[in-house]
Length: 200
Length: 120
Image 1 (tube, each protein chain N blue to C red):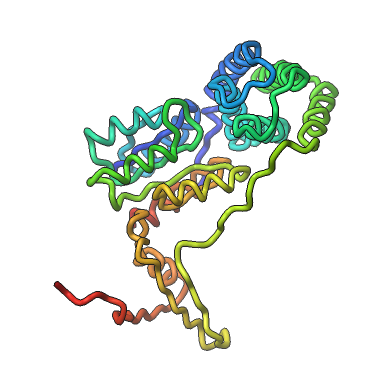
Image 2 (spheres, rainbow over the protein chains, first blue to last red):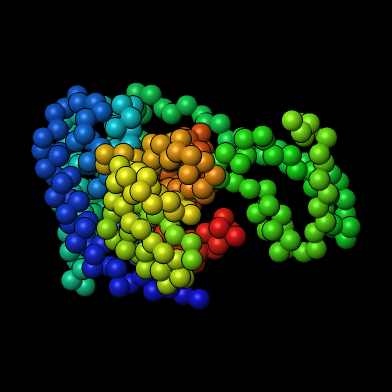
């Protein structure tokens, strides 16, 4: 089954050009040294939407260009990277370049590749200059503890599954996992009720 | 048929999500930010919430947190659409009560498969 999304390209072009307008006007209002202003959030969202949409439509040049832009802006909005005048100038050039790329895609003509490559490199260079603070490592613990005990493939798998007590509170349900597993082969489920509190 | 609240500030993304979901027979209600979505959710109970993260007024994480506090949305599946560049946002979403997340670029087949799993 293939769902054709190409009919939505035109809306994406229009919305991206509007986003670039907002981005440009916010950049012009942005002062060097600003942190956590609504302006930075607006600029970030515009770049972020263009990146998301371009990836969906397979506009890879646009995706990789906005990816580095988004990474820089993400650090700025989180207060981890300073908003400097040279950065603002570079971002304004990036807006012009993006506008050119989108208009070219819309009209089915070639865009200025040399300019895009050059700006992309400048943005990459800025990105590689270390920001003030890097993000702390995150907790990647899953919601459930799963233990698999040794067995040969021929004998199948024995899975001890122990959800955390708050599993249902995130809209999850162990039944869905059993259903997924059952779709992969034959499944036998045994319930361990020893941890169940006595009925009141 | 199940009803889905689709929240995204991007008009093209909303149109694509709605097109995909309606094509599969779901009833879809759209909102363009968390604030609007919360207002809709209070007047109409939906079976699933699908939300973008970065939005003006109220972002997707604040929306999930606010919805989870409502009695009607305690156990409702809530899915986030994220980008691969924001892993820490997944953790924030999880802490707010998100059921799961899907990574953009938007893939209609994957969206339908995931929704079918959680609405089962």
